[in-house]
Amino acid sequence: MTPEAELLDIIEDYRKKIDRLTIWRTGPDRLQSLLRIAVRPRAEMARHNRDSTDFPWESLVEIMIEWHYKYPIGSAQCNEDDAFEALMLAMSFMRLDPLRAAVRVGGYRVRRNSGAFRVTHKWDMGAEVADMMLERQARKTVHHNTTQAELDWAKTQTRNRLNSFSPPINLLRSASVRANLLVDQIKNGHPEGYLPDDFSLGAGLTVGIMTKVITGLMAIADLGELAHSRVAHPGTTLLHAQRSMFIGWIRQLHSDLSEEIVGAAIDRLMVGPKRSLSTATAFQVRGCPRRR
Image (cartoon, rainbow, N blue to C red):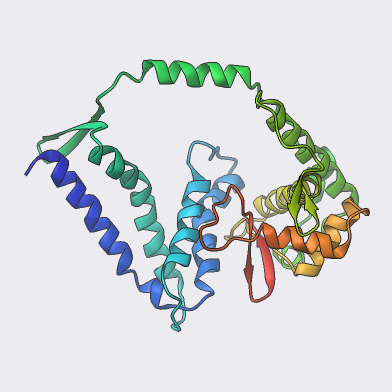
């Protein structure tokens, strides 16, 4: 058997282990358990002022969502051990699965040495790396820091308060301004242009309306994560609230949007089968939307 075939067999064994996970026998609340345990390490690093940007957290969360919708819903009770077992496999899967397609099409050279695999590109990556560096230089990132008022507010939060999270409107507005600046920065980084605000997305929604709702949700999530990171208690940065509260917060920021329109936009952003995190940013548990 060639080293390539051996490596593909190992990857296939991991995929079979995923199929046999105990968590797939549990009920619909397993999604909440999967996401909670996926973001917990990031939350703990934030509490200890450790940088966590070098780990692809979004990819890990996306895998959890994809798996949840891939497997049938069971009826058993989900516990933390089940979710942790899935987390461990997901972290290995993130490193191994990208190799699967590349090895099959001959993109990598695989060698076996003393039981370990050595994987190298078959092509010169110099040109691609240079292109990435030029693109990064062309898209200058300007970081807009949180305000002192936001930091002072976060320090006063407790676990009980987080369970009834409700940020002051003045802080929500400042976080929304920061989110808008980030969105404008992303738009300006695309020389090919972007869709105009009046472009229709159906159901009464336009690009401009979706931008308002998305930046509002970004502001809410930003304050939620800031508050969670200051609480000295194991947990996660998942923010949860009733659907009506999310709609109310967005309407406080944008009084020109009706309750129906904001609700339709939030539904459009809800996770579901075949929806990636690039287009879906919230999930629903027993009627209560959560913002990742």
